Length: 330
Image (cartoon, rainbow, N blue to C red; front, top):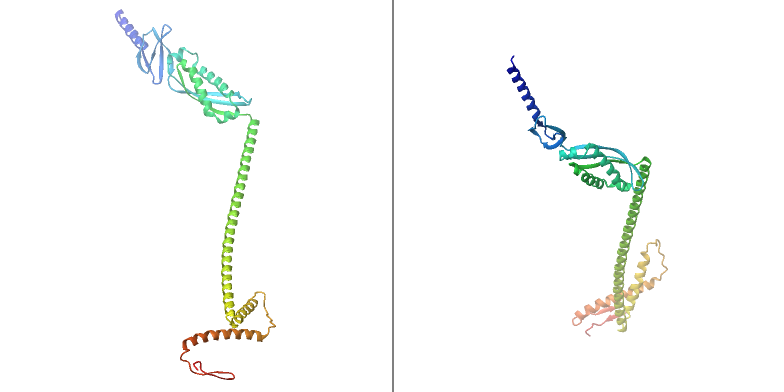
């Protein structure tokens, strides 16, 4: 092989080497920084790009995807001097590859230490009860502080979450006893309120029952008074009629009145529940006389009615025990 052939081979090999040195392929999700004689010049985005061979070089390959970083467990003293163990997780994404490369050394370590320091600061400014009940507020405060501090590094912290807050065992036992006491207190209060409400309802029911019973007694009293009033009116009217009859010379009216009272008293005595045998040492002549008086009154009433209808036409004689009575027309 002569000298020209060797030159051609060397030239082709050198050309291929230059092509390989100048052509760069950037993967999706990454950015490459380009340095020329050690100085940053530009950033390569995903795809096929060219650089000046042997003059430019790739400075760093920066992952631009969102990443998660575990925050290890650490001890934190709260504002009320309680010792707790806490850990967390941080999510971040590089937005500027050049700043993430040249503004901070060891980006992940810087984010980790910054997050752990702010966790101690935020949790140390709160009481234990607030730590256990205000997770969202803690996460929001941590995110605002850490994101503001990492903005100059070309990094966006998207989320910081506290995974676990573990108080000491003796403190956990004390909290359990306190929670049990609070629950028992609430249960006692609820039972007392229930008993109070039941007593109130029972009292209201008894009150309404007494009111209704009183109203019933009042209505019954009104009805009884009205009945007694009507009975008294009827008695007074009957007495008046008997008095008028006596004043007119009719002695049989008083006999009827006394006989009615006499028979009514006998009826009440005979119908009593506690009476099984009734012994009456009564004079039969008095009873028969009273009944006879009633009979005479009845005959007189009916006789007056018949006499008014046949006074002008009746001429037949009537007999008495002792003689003959002449006709009424004679």
